[in-house]
Image 1: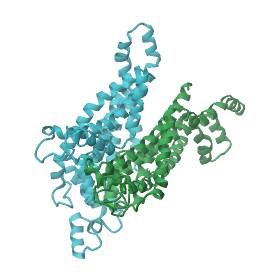
Image 2: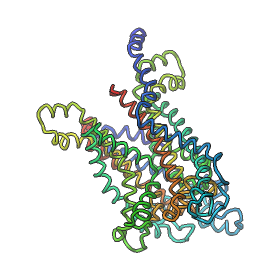
Image 3: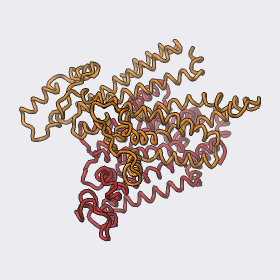
Image 4: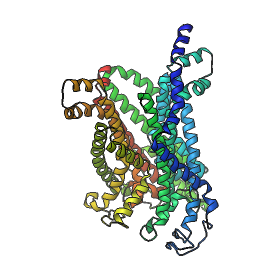
Length: 296
Length: 335
């Protein structure tokens, strides 16, 4: 039995290692991953370092409402007369931060639970899946709204609900990717070795689902940005006066003809951010599929 | 988790009864899901620090007004009693009054429901055939330049938030570039949505643009998998014309996986209307939800949530049953 096992492991060992390492690197050879990465990096840089380059205080009233661009105000003024450029440079940080934190929490929790479900099988697996079914019975935005309706738009609350709606989707994907991995001999070997469940999950199984995890993380991040920006657009940012791309769009959307910069600049920024991250995810997915098919 | 164990036992007992049993299990699970959803929605108000009346009236509320609102909301009764009252009201179709207007919630929601349903149906009627067509054509012409461009565009479109798409459509068709549609889609009270088609186009087009790429991409993948299968290969070898292979043999088999995604996207539409309706001020349940949340009118928010969750669960149930029916493997293994 042990000899058989060792034999099979020896025969099969190289395959999973090549797969794992390759996916992310291979994805970088695709032009869509590169474009996506370039866009994402550019927007992230704007979001993080933008405030240092802002010409004005984002809350200072510097012109007439919806004043068109002039030398002092290169992108014009918004509905209150604040500088659109400065608010744009300040407005990415909170969206990015809240999205990243909730994605990390949601995907992290989802990975652990998904691996747990795949490794446990049986009733634990079943119960966990039913649990995700129930969370999936809400459209993502609805769960956030019903909580905000009672408690109010608090940042920690938005982070928690976005993470909570991210989690069941990740559980499904990771469990799906891991079910074939847990049947492999090296998992049996680790079990026979007396390794703990957590160690098996993180050391043996996780490296073999990195492709799925990469795709999942980028897609979840896209949805988190979409969701948080949509919430801000609907009027549910923790602080409506703080510069935020989502709130900028809704506050200025009536000036689409009068001062198009005010709503369109932040709208384009949000779209570029989600598209950039989405393209990276698509690139990873394609690289993973290519490796599975033995092409590329 | 304890909530789930009876249903699991139930499912095991029903499983041997074949198709009918399988469908019955799905229905039972859907009902169970709705019960749990109603508990979560109800519990969300119970989790408040203080209570709902205090949250609504704010810090300056007087003792008397607080007691009055608590009585009106039934907060002086036990949580169990309140929950039974909440579910009873939903089932009777009379879930109480709005906190903002004081009017019955359903009086405001009923016409809005018709408007939203019409919007979603128009969007679905356009996007489903369109996406199946795009997905199939892309699969047949796989890796050609057209497929490459279209799948890239769809990927991009699928990543853009719906309110940005809506705003772009307003900029293109209602204000800056062309002015063929109204930018605001308010439907006057008392008039059915189909007599206001002008108002429907832009919100419907937004939903179509959001949903189509998702279905088309899955349809393309499903179609490619089927076209690479052995039975298609043998059909080709026996000389069946390619067009007939695609339409008669591949398409029906690729529809099964697409089914689930269509349902997921229809279910998404039920929630997506919240943002899209808000962009166009469309007179539907989505805007009602946004306003209810903005005004902390949580009884209305709870009702809208239950309605949308209901649509969501029923759509997914229909997809599950549909998948069981169109997948011969599932039928035969169980029968």
